[in-house]
Length: 111
Length: 106
Length: 105
Image 1 (spheres, helix red, strand yellow):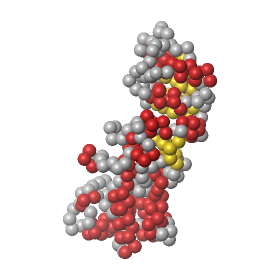
Image 2 (tube, chains in turn purple, green, orange; image 1 turned 180 degrees about the vertical axis):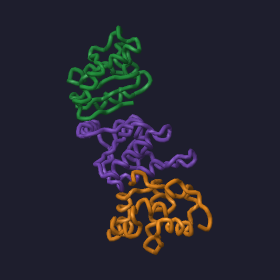
Image 3 (tube, each protein chain N blue to C red; image 1 turned 90 degrees about the vertical axis):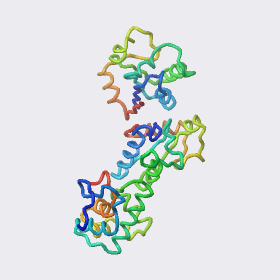
Image 4 (tube, chains in turn red, orange, purple; image 1 turned 30 degrees about the vertical axis):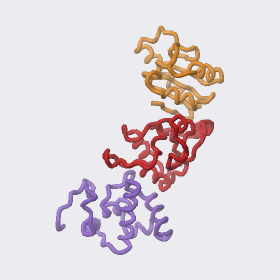
């Protein structure tokens, strides 16, 4: 569960690395971008001038790590005047599907 | 049941508001650390906040605050929203072990 | 070695900019590997992966990426094991000048 914007602190990056590690180890993993986390999906990102790894680039590797369930909370997009055309990955779901996703999760890691 | 813990004050952070948007009637919310300010019975900056908690509580969502964190902040004698029950560390453990998963809002 | 390249504790290049085909030969020699066309193909693909995703892939994603780009025959761990023993993701990333993959045994 990614709830924070990228680059301002290490949370988004660490969350992504945790997800990639779960995927690389073969654990069935879904990711959910919600609240401030939806900023992570804006494209294109160019983080070279702030000396950080490009997180949109890293996130685009998720399917190669066998993470194919990439969900984005619709309300969070709407609150930030964003729409499906602003983000570079993921399927947009409403809050009832967010609730179902959480309820069906064995473990939730929040970043 | 998912146990949602919230540790940020509702007055400077939207963690509790974000939690309230996706919590269900079978879930439990536990306010800890600075999160306990969210249980105060006073008008909130977020419109509809008190009503939302009341409605969820009526539907079955559990609301708790951690006693030690209230006491530390001088909230023990203040009026809390009626939805909130006070619990201690042992109660926290019981809630955590009864939960299918724990979601930490911070 | 002709010239000392700055390495980390695992023997990986500290700076990708130091990488050259000659550096790759040196790094391969430290793993007792003599590079062939089949090795170079994987090495360049790994560098492309790193360029595109800013990541050094462990085994599963590496195998998947190779299968996508070079076909299923090569996108298999046994094939990579023959080229880059004993731990293909680690050894190949080392020769390609990339950091050691995280979550890699």
